[in-house]
Image 1 (tube, rainbow, N blue to C red):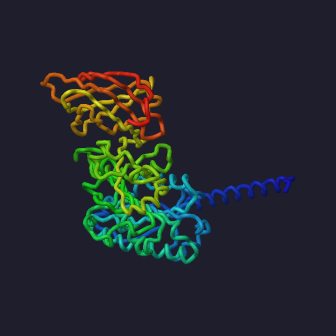
Image 2: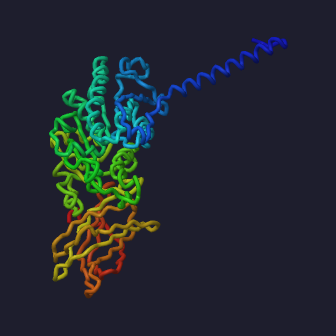
Length: 462
């Protein structure tokens, strides 16, 4: 339409303003449709809350704007594609009523990784209660609610094997109860520091167990307090031994972080695995002590496919792990992002006449930066012509290694200083398929750094 007169110009302006107002209204309407996690506070916890389950639905199209799914007609949302995989994200106990700080980032990381349906299970009303035992009772009810939804999905053509449930703390057992209702036909359950109180020592039918899905994995980060101690899945990861996590407070005077940091670390470790830029290698082992002693670095005797990678990509080891039924694994992490460490198997042969005991400090240098590790978790024994194998994990990947520094310490300052005579030392990288580095004939004087240039090892075997 061409505005040729003043009247027409006024009409055009009116129409334009109407269109702008309509667009603005549409945008406001769309923003108002974004569903948020239920936000409660301590007064709700003290008075107790009755269970209400809300389903917050995300896809790549609405990755930052959740839509509330109807329990009765979940597929009325045209973006719910039943042929796409579906991931459920289930939080745990919320004693203060606040939404999990990590939830939105978790959703974004999942959707960045793969095109899928993501359903955040908001049961904050029911999880917020100072009475923990009442919250535990609610886990069965949440599972019944999810069972009803998944049954509707199945009836409308969804493949149960395409369903992945990620449960945090109590959410891990909710995932297990839901999976059990489908006789273990759900594709995958990921349990992030499954809750221990009221579940430790329970029968498999009363907690998460490997029969609840085709593949069940569990990460333990607070097994001495809020988490579960024993094996729960086809593969169980014990980060830093499964209890105290690096960087978490050691004193109660640190406030709330003292109680939740170790427990919550499981979430951030798994989230870091979604970007895949810094993979964490897990080592099957009978104990954390044997892992630290370097006795579990040969994954071939457990898994023909090699050491599994912790996190989202562990599904690649599913078939081998399911055949083993239950596998206990360990790994170490840094105290913050990036969490991954870079490991070396260190083989040492000494030629002292007497057996020496002590600790080692190792530094790697590439000419610009340096990484250091202190092997002091226990006294190391160095016996003449006997190979000692150690695990050294550094906080960074220092490449290429141009210099290595070693320091030997007995920890007994009042005694005469000892000397450790090294016949040969070999550094075998556990990642990146790099060639081992060696050095021969070194003399370490106690408490003094000895720096040398490593050379390619003369043979492939030690």
